[in-house]
Image (cartoon, rainbow, N blue to C red; front, side):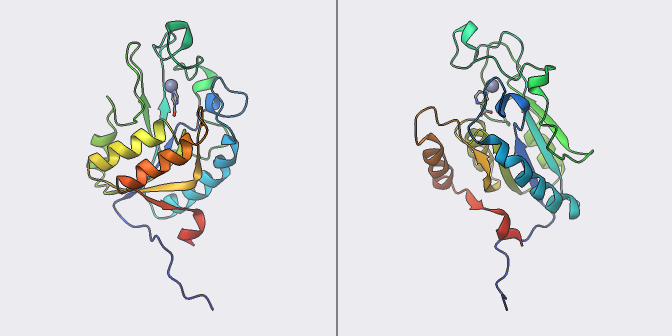
Amino acid sequence: MNTTAPAFRLSHGDALIAVHVQNDFLPGGGLAVPDSAAIVPVLNDYIVLFVRQGLPVIATRDWHPPHHCSFRQQGGPWPSHCVGGSSGAEFSSGLALPENAWVVSQATRPDKEAYSSFEDTDLALILHDLGIRRLFIGGLAADYCVLNTVLDARRLGFDVVVLEDAVRAIDADSGDGRRSLHRMQAQGARFAVLKDFA
Ligand code: VGL
Ligand code: ZN
C-alpha cells in the first residue's frame, strides 16, 4: 500500500498560470519551441486539477504589434511571432482552457520587449484580488518568458512551483533551459511533475 502523501495539495490561494501556449510557439509556428507540443496534454491535466477545486486558471499570451522591436525586421533577435489578433497568436486549439480562464496579454508596446507576464500587465493586480499566494507555472518558453515570469513572481513574494513536465526551452544556446531552471531554483522556486499531485 502506498501511504505517501502527495507532494502538493492544492487549496484556496493557489492558481495555475499557463505561459504562451500559442500557435507560434508550437510546431509549424513562427517561433516554434522544440518539443513544445508535448506540454499541451500535460497542461490539460493540470487544468483539470485546478478546475476541479475551483481554483483560477490564467493564460498569458505574447501579443505583439506587427512591427515589434523584438522582430528581426526591426533589428531584434526573433522572427516575427504572436502578432496580436493573428492566428499565430491564438492559444493552441488543443489547450483546454476553462471558459472563465483569465487572459493576460504582454509585450504589446512596439518599442519595448517584455519577457515577464507581470511586466506592464494587470497580472499582479488580478492575483492580489483573487487572494492568490502560490503560483503553479508552466508553458513556453522555459528560458525566456517562463523564466522571467517566475523570477518576477518570486520578487513579488509569491510561492512558485514550476511544472517541470509542462515547460520547454528554446535552447538557442545549448543548456539555456537547464540553466534557467537553476536560476529559478536559486530564487526559491520549487519544482513539480503531475505525479506529485496524485
Ligand atoms: C518568448 C521569445 C520571444 C517566450 C516570447 O514566450 O518565451 N520568447 N517572445
Ligand atoms: Zn515575443
